[in-house]
Image 1 (tube, rainbow, N blue to C red):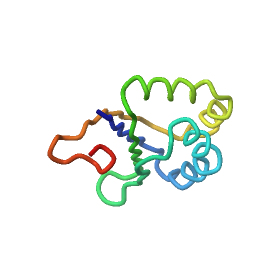
Image 2 (cartoon, rainbow, N blue to C red):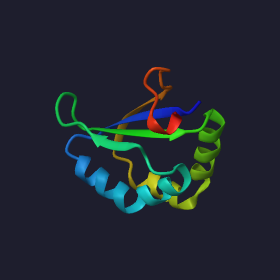
Image 3 (tube, rainbow, N blue to C red):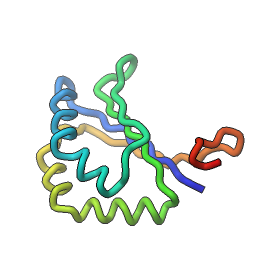
Image 4 (cartoon, rainbow, N blue to C red):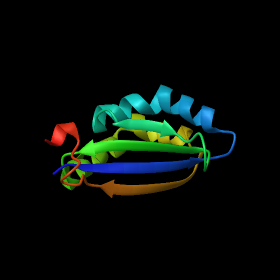
Length: 107
């Protein structure tokens, strides 16, 4: 059964546009190369602001661990993390689909 990872990044107030531009220019390609395209990459509009929410799918915990280890060792990703240090906090959550509401790729 596939797993889904939700990551919520809190960004410094007033720096969200800068964070997103740096991610677009330096982070997205290398991250996608290792992790695949995200299911979604969102920003908060109402409620708690300055949040970026990322949702990704993995085949298993082992698949996630393998992909993330490869990305963390990539010099391009290491560089991106050093220049995009606008994050205040991060929350991660692993989710699984319920049996009555599977996503299309799990049927």
